[in-house]
Image 1 (cartoon, rainbow, N blue to C red):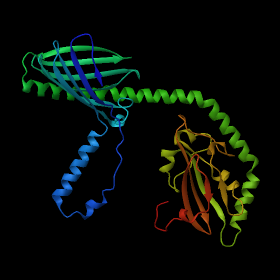
Image 2: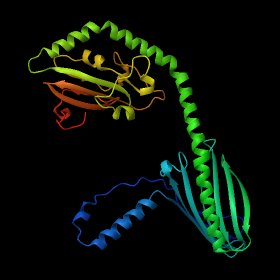
Image 3: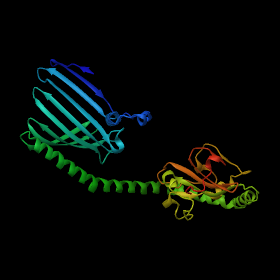
Image 4: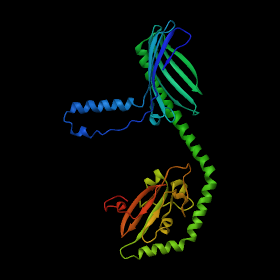
Length: 345
């Protein structure tokens, strides 16, 4: 962008917003590259590209009677905010400038605390005027800066010492203050979500239990019918439904949650009988829809988490297993679900 004002002079700037997602390329040819040095330099170049790709860059030139300078900055997100800049995590920033008024180098970082629109930053500035520690608080486009003079001379030893001490203090603050407060906040948020959803959960669980009580005879007939097939029909051994991350870690031998007591703690529910009821002629078909709407199902997650359904079943007396996401269709049986004898259940 180019701009001009009432004061004499010209200002030009180049800006790249950053946050781009790196797309992996095919690197299989490296396996056949005999030159180790070439492989090393290519991997090093690839690492540099992956590190810089999400970065935000800005370069600015000013030419005029009151200010003639060149400045540049690089900003990169950390943790979960590599591609979002501060939405969940922090960032680091390097900035430098050189002009007729002097030079300065700045290294710092920050993140969002307390409120989504409030950012907190700390930076060390090394310039020809001395070494400063800057504390910055931003909210709604406004910024409040507190400069603290650390040294009146531009000693690189003092600058490195200040950077090191600041990094240690920030790390201690993150571990001793921020993380406990964040855990407390998430726990409180989970409790509030439970209070909001407790009525819905109780009602949904009651309706599901009542439906299964009415279908007990049909469930038993379906199981007996499939067990009576000579070659072996479709028998649901175990089926669970709930939070995707928790369902993924469940094994066949793991105990099921006690009905009405442990479902919320476990994060999933037992839907073995509900799935057996849906078996017809040794087949089971479910269309694309949330499983929480099925007969005998209800949503045991407190925060409306992503959910999945995990099923272990016998078909022709061979154990099968599959996991499907909440809105994915279900087709049983399938040969791809067949477990090898040595596989973990």
